[in-house]
Amino acid sequence: MKTAAILIGVLVGLRVVIIILAVLAILYLLMIMPRLTNRRERKKFLSVYYAHRGLHDNETDAPENSMSAFRRAVEAGDGIELDVQVTKDKIPVVFHDFTLQRVCGQEGKVCDYTYEELQQFCLVDRDRNVTPYKIPRLKDLLEWGKDKVVFNFDNKYINTRGVSDEVRKASLDYYIRQLRPGGDWSMYHNIMLSVRSLDEAMYYWNAGIRNVMFCCEISSREMFDAYDACPIPWDYIMAYIRLSVDPRLQEVYDLLHERGVSTMTSITGSSDKVKNPRDRRVCYLRDLVSEPDLIETDYPSEFVDLPRSRAEIHALQDRAIEGNRSVKADKAKKNRRK
Image 1 (cartoon, rainbow, N blue to C red):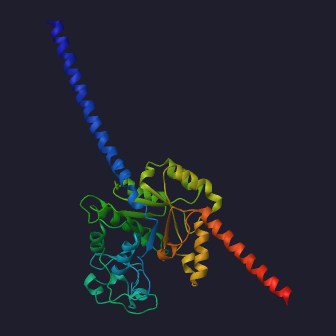
Image 2: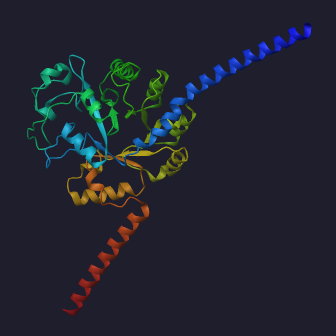
Image 3: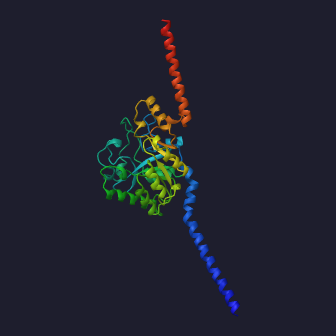
């Protein structure tokens, strides 16, 4: 009897242990599943170019942050960088500035008007010509692009001077509410958030946000070490390396690539500002020498025929130098004949 009782006790104990192990295994899978899912889907974030405020220009009547500019970006195979503002009646719209003057030629701020009131205004192009396009509602854009393109959200309330800490926190909390289960953005898995600091990234992470990619500024060894030590897996991170690639930080770029992290540079405030297309091309070649993985630009179409690797760029430069030497030699011969 004692032996039977002991055997039954052992079997019951084993059953309990098996159940506990099974529960732990399920919990572990639930914990890592978002990482595994995100790792499989990471490729969709690797568009070579991100069209800054859409693929906008004057020739095709496509003003910035318009549906026309977004359609052109998708047709070109580019990702889309966009900006979010909130109307008086709490509807998120796609608009860069806080005020309407530059892009709509109207007085006041976006938040001074309801969404319906904003629809009376038209967007203007770079030459201040009025177009037929209206300010898009973010929800409509996300629904239109959910299976087509990656959206890079730039939260202007975070990096704009003069914005109070209270407003910055409120904007982060708003994004978190929209991204959490049940939020208006929660069903979309093609969103990348630009974050300016590790504290900002951790604020999202600690709030349970797992359905986005974080585009984090990592432009120094100290920043790399901080992210390397933080609990956010590298699978969730794209490294923003500021306006231009710094050859002095090649070690950081190499470390990022060892972690499987892609690097993004933005040239919207530097090379894109050069007015002459030929001079702008020279600047673009300089930007490409350090081989960034992704580029945010106002002119993605101008990169189509440019070489991407350092070796190809150097070969192009060597041919140009050799061509100049030949021209000079020909001129010298003509002068000697005279």
